[in-house]
Length: 119
Length: 111
Image (cartoon, rainbow over all chains, first blue to last red; front, side, top):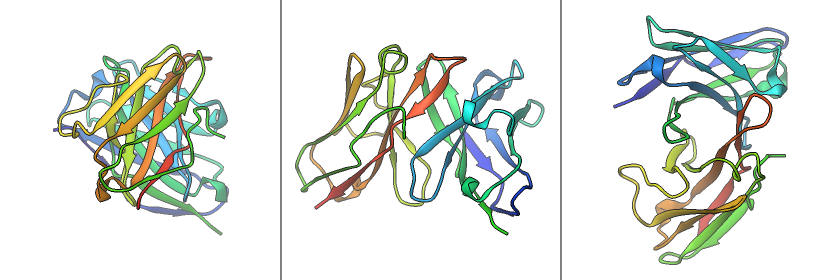
């Protein structure tokens, strides 16, 4: 059974950075891409970027280019998403999710991490 | 402004059949398969349909998906109160270096 377990809620000041972790278990971590998707309060889902751990290659949504960094540690089956220059509009629940390229789908999701940006 | 277009709301009474539409373009739905997610309040999205019309294990056959050209639909038959949730469509977009796109979500109310 694939599980993605994320780090806990964060409260950050505007202008600071946040780093959220996502530990995978129950599957072959390196073989699947991990995406990060956020959801602002009362809003829809927004894709931020992804990484393919076996290649160590990440690509990002244009909106977040230069502000987001996604990394992965194969030794601990953990992916990370760091967002910098935080502003109030970044207040959201951040999800990591596993992609299965065989079926062109995002199939498993983490439980979500609430990041609150407030002065 | 989401790349994929969904109606913001839908409703039905128990036992009815409802459909939710999702409209995209040639670079996403027109080129790749469509996924549907159900999100209950306060929880992470759950995969409902993948590869346009396939159900993961455990998803009731009341849920079905279809795709034609650059549009897709989710149908829910025999509507139940526990189906009240937000529903999202998603597809890979081949533009630029490629990225995932989502619909804005449809809030389904069971009357």
